[in-house]
Length: 506
Image (tube, rainbow, N blue to C red; front, side):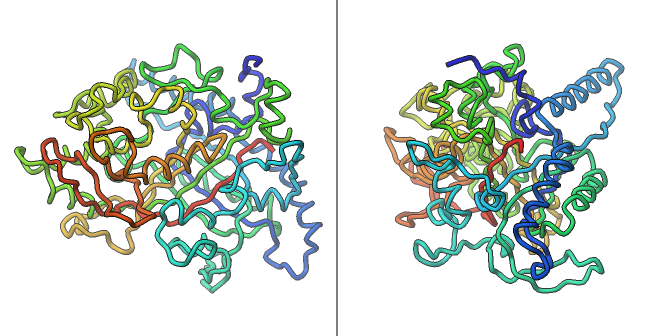
């Protein structure tokens, strides 16, 4: 196969997927339907044609490419280096980023048709092509109804046909409306909400009368020393794969797995004709599938559980922190317990040349250093499986926290206030959903027998694991060093919505 030449293509790849993605301190996700708020007076075919014209002539120039995102990140690094040299604080640089993606229904609406060819396959597989409700039960999302009629317990904005509140009216009144099918997602990132809102105003002006807003979600980097950490307190974004032919070898950290570009990108410019035929149509050039999850986190409840089940023999606070680290597979600093199992090492946690330089091949028959079902072991079982196997299931993550910090009242009562919803707006990129996000969730995190071949049943991923079959209790073995009895878990991460998009440069 010809060598992948990313430098020739980075201006035609959207910016959130590679090389660290779009820089962001805040991010808005605007889910939309391609239709007129006044449907009765609009010719559907003309509306779609007008949307396509606006998309190509006015919106595409706003898209932040991989090349532009890299320039933004380089500017940030130069500013930080200069500030460090002068022993000062680096300023927050003004910047904004814009990307777009479409659902299967959105692509159909825009008449993006795939040439089926000899194999008769559509890109994306069932999870993408059958819509967001299909597969929710298989992924373990709580809900009601049999297969084919299963309705997950999501926010109603994610459920087409549900009655929801319409807050888009100009006079700020609230009225009931019907949730629509989602055709696309516009993501806007920036250094502050005012800059993001200004860019959104421009975009709304471009598509005025052509789209209806179905759902809008806002995420923000957490404040102070919690920057880069998700709401449970753990450093996030550690252990991202590097992409061969994209990431500069000089910038690849020790232990960082390097994956072929076809793991992340659907169709590469320099592929053989046979590879292109299998991958998809020409308009999908260098595209990727975006998996989005709206995940609510019950942080006070999680912390209370750790305190009540703290590992004995230590002061209560330390015992709780250790149990949390064994659930995650890392200390909150990011330091892996596979390397430092008994005490945190914050310097290691923040060092990209140390916090990813390990595997789990140290003792295949013991959970003393790390439980088999720890979150980072379930989702990337390096050493338990070969690198060749894990490489095919790697994803690039680009999520952001949302919601307020835990209040004093919540911390005291150990219960999340109804008005204080918080969690993670999870985003991942992969060329094949059935090998990426859905496989990791369904076959690894939700599978109490994985990792296979161990001396005991590992149990579920204690962070994101769900129990769709309900044939046993949600539990984990090895949470305590010496206690063989499985620890019964509670689900602290609640799915509130999920959708799969195709992310490509239109």
